[in-house]
Image (cartoon, rainbow, N blue to C red):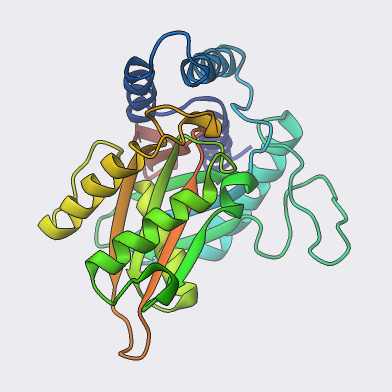
Length: 292
């Protein structure tokens, strides 16, 4: 097994079985906010036990290991074809080892060949940078939370939402209300304001690469993120929709240029099993740093 292959298999294992520290901190804080003896507190306690068992046994945190999304920042000259081939082999090996569920099926026939490989699976997003190292980030996004993503085209008469940040706020909160407990909350929102229908959704998912406790450098977006988080947690939806004070753990918003005729707000929803991990690779492709 090559060094790169070993590194990518270990990245998948750790992403599947261990939640990052920032997510654990947010979940612990959310449990402290819930009243003892409530269903919400009980749900979060079960989540806590689940996280501990998964890490100790090196088994998936959730049985739905979801879509496999790689984000690769690489220098000019990286052989992306060879890297992609190795990433796909790593997914195949990780699936055989049980780090990933046999979770990818033919879109037309529903056939599952047990490898998690196929058109678009895994998804590989390459981005060149001027640094001389490679960084690989991985998101495992379950189907339940994917199902409650939403995209709005403003203005939206039903929500009285105009083409401004107030309209964006109305659309994002509507997505939270529509999701209720179906996205395995408490959830995290990745949002893109602008773009087209395809790039808006794609860019919204890159927001999941941010740390939960970071702050948006744009003051207006930072204020909107904090407002939506606080407002959503006052809705009473709570963990798994059981009621309580923790509907969301985080809100991350980015913007992309749009054409004048369109104003899209794309909302991607991540479940509490916020499986996101990343590594920096040495020239020999060994892991030198864990990014989360």
